[in-house]
Length: 338
Image (cartoon, rainbow, N blue to C red; front, side, top):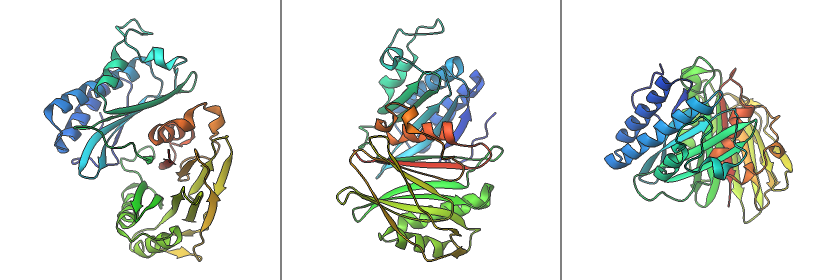
């Protein structure tokens, strides 16, 4: 039985879906979160269908299936997002698989169709032998514009909160990203990362190096963290990047090329050298991926045809599934400017 904290945080709640009982818990959690967000009763009922069908699909078809239930926000509006991740068997023909009437287990084959009809927005990527990642959002009314950045965090096995945190903001026209890895695990690591996110969202816009300096000064009362800030400037064709500690950043080109970005050694809040900022080319169609050391660097997008054209949520879910480790908190943040 999954324990759901009072007052669902925007980071959400992860479920490992292997039995019908867990599928019911996913549905109840989605309904409860929607109620906390004051969504209309009709949309809560439709969200309930989405959650039940999504979890049911994982029980019937998936291997190592998980679902994240979390709030999504845009201005004063709030909705509920479900991200379904599994490791197989995947779909060879996605359009056929998501249409009504298709089933591989002798059912009516209307589950996927029901999910997509109730969703405000959805996206997926699936490959035979690797699995499927499906992201679904349900909003009270017309959904806002699709996000340019999205991330996922997951706690180490045995913990209920993650010491990793991710955030994105647009401040004075600057599109900036933050990935933070609080030292250690559990509540104290999470407290450091949440403080970094709070300061990141409230501090004045400035260069990534200036923002990292501000974060360093703000974390002295915490156990400290590794963190990095990136700024995407499509007009200049650049990613500006400053990092302190073991946070990885990579720019993936539309041609499959990859360019790693540099963080300097240190612990934000406790010890650092002079923070340095580096510039990297940002070509049209490029994707920026940042992650903590709970995600390994061996992930190769050329093994996932079409993935880098998908939404940031789906890219992040795929990276977390195939490159995230269960022996550490894991956090990944993806930005893709259309």
